[in-house]
Amino acid sequence: MGNTDRHNIIIIMEDSFRRDHLSCYGNKWIKTPYLDKFASESVIFDNAYAEGLPTIPVRVSMFTGRYTLPFRGWQPLEQLDVPIAEILWDKGVTSALISDTYHMHKPQFGFSRGFDYVEWIRGQENDPWIIDPNLKVDLMKYSEKNWHPSYPGQPSIVVKRQFEQFLKNRANWKDEEDNHIAQVFKKSMKWLETEISKGNRDKLFLVIDSFDPHEPWDPPNQYLDLYPVPEYDGLPIIWGGGLVDDWTLPEIRHLRAQYAGTITLSDKWTGIFIEKVEDLGLLDNTLIIFLSDHGEPLGEHGIIKKVCPWPYDELSHIPLLVHLPDNIKVRRKRVTDFVGIPDLAPTILKFFGISVPNIMHGNNLISVIQEEKEGLNFGISGFHERSWSIRNHEWSYYLWLGPRMVGAKEKPELYKYEPEVVPPEPGKYELGRNQAEMENLFEEQKEVAFSMENYMRQFIATLNPSAGDLMAKDFMKRQMTLRASP
Image (cartoon, rainbow, N blue to C red; front, side, top):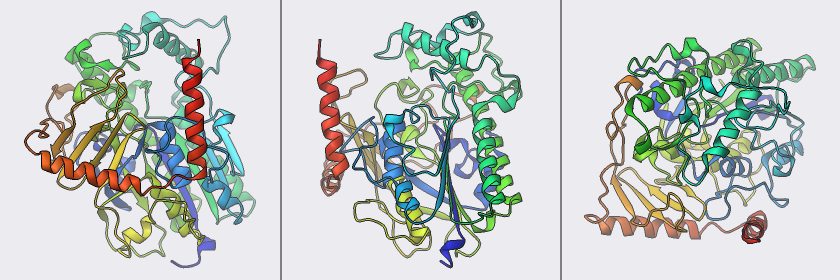
């Protein structure tokens, strides 16, 4: 691999970025010129899947190199977890975390542990940042679909307050550079410039965690104009979610256009950042990993947004692009092995020449790229204690665990693998068409289904809990006790 002391690593995590909105995964209409160029110079992973969903469990997995699905849900890092930044700090790597993902910035969540520099950009979604009681926002400029009908299990009044908070957070925006993703990348470029001014050009580790293109989807108008929906003449819908039964087709098309515009905005600022890395002379010796934590249902399987714990392909299948330094030989440009979030931490450690602790579950992606080691022949995804799924190159199987809450299902589901299904332009979208996993073959193929379930259960049984997982289990018990208290 060469002299690892001369290398850097940059992780670019963009929340809710659907892989089927990139041309390298078959899309022909979305405008992502910067990531198209980046993909053409990178290794493309075709079967990368998010394992434990959604936002916070994925970050725990990324920071620890461990599967979370069997052990914990949405909760902080535990005291006995070993986040990768702490390992790198002990090895002399200079690190930074720059993010606007407000779910992470609560001190008790512990995601800043081990980083030399941390910067949180405030105001995403309903982050309680602007609390001026005299600041008024005009809800009449937006469709009631942003908060009504309510999401399953969440009252409309709660969603309305969250939406109002976001409007307050962005009330003083003046131009495109005020958008959160622009702020995140500008701060990231400034950190790199600062380190270089100190003479630090190697052994840098930068994690950029952008909440965009997660909703709210409100990019500048020039991005929305790229994806017209002539039949929609209502007020903007930038937040709404729920069951498609409560939406008209023009409303869904409009929402999909808002999302597409946000994707193109995200693409632009990602490109500006990568060009800056090149201008600073860091591109040739830097490993850059672009990925998302998950996708986003936009009408598929009857839901909009993550309102149900359903790890279907549109949610769990993620983009993963890896740009290698010049001195690392690329054996293949596309990888069809199954890989996932737990693979990031081992990859980072091995890249810096650091031994991977036995506690980590993942594989080194560079070894997979160079065909020194095979990736997995299956991928698992799900929501802790709610749903498990497993897929291979022929089938995908879904097992519903309960409890009987909103969004719960009972009958297992089995789907035949289909070639890439790419969504049409927003104005041409039709419900129930151009999407994968529509015909449940469980009854006809029970032998296949039970074989996949058995394989999944056996694999999960091999994942021994860590000390942090055992603490997490106690945490979940305490949370359940608190919720049950009168």
